[in-house]
Amino acid sequence: VLGPDIGFEQVVADAEELVADCLERSGELAHHVGTNAVARDVDLLRRALGEEQISYLGYSYGTRLGAVYAALFGDRVRAMVLDGPVDPAEQVSRPSRIQADGFEASWSAFAASCDVEPECPLGALGGSEQAFAVAVAAVTAAPVPAGDRQVTHGEFYLGVAAALYSPETWPMLGAGLAEIVVSDSAVVLQALGDMLLGRLDDGSYNGSLDVMFLVDCADDPRRPPPDEVFDASVLLAETLAHFGPAFAGSTGCHPLPAAVDPLHVGPADLEVPALVVYLEGDPATPPVWARALAEVLGDAVVISPDAEGHGAYMSNSWCLTDVVTAYLVDLEVPVDGWSCREP
Image 1 (tube, rainbow, N blue to C red):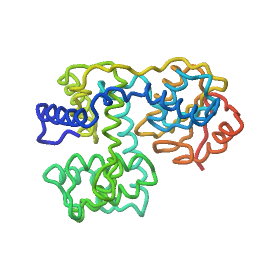
Image 2: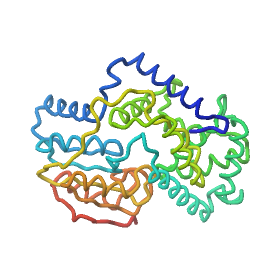
Image 3: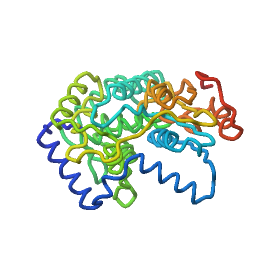
């Protein structure tokens, strides 16, 4: 997240410090953690279990992993559900217009819901848009207290984004924005940001974001100059009404060297077509990515409910539960394009 006083030189310096620390701790392993390698590890687990085939359910990044596994080991797949699908063409070296628009759309869905919901506290503060603007101004001027910690400009955007991953956390988002506006406190937004960052009870972090950075870069064969990536991210950010700072400031994979085993996703020869599931209101993996992934796999059908959130099955959608369960248990494949409306 690009803060108000952070420029290109600082972002590059931070990236170089992060990568140096990763390489010091991980050595050569850091260059060999891409999705191709993870898929081969999955097949080692299959062999260790003595199973001829596996049934696979993957969410978000798990859809990329599943797609690679299907391309490499298609004959070892009994059934495969890819929920919250990632387009294989999306790479960290290219700031994502599609994902940025997804978060903007999810904010709009939250705001529309909040502004007609009597229990949402933002109505008394001029509505969601007004509350957001006041909260942004507060965290931009100075970090906002959060108990014995503080929420910075960047942590604010992480907290808001985290809340948009599920309608279940929309009430927390309303409460968190109201807390900043009314009390100049950000305990709720900090808790949401901590959830996205993987902060543990003892104050340490689970390392999931660092791992994701290394995996994404190990998958990405492109290495544009960092200034090119940075400028592209800033241009994208300038077009966003709410989340510009959250998408500005990327330097891609700088200064990691070129990928040694770039992402391999291709046609999959499956006994039963893969089931690609998307939510119409997914902020992180927008609907267009589902069809893109299905086209790369070839052997896949796409289904969707009209719900909001990231991840559908047993998560943010229930109208498709029986259909996905029947697929996983009895290999009943729905018609491509099947959809449902949440009750």
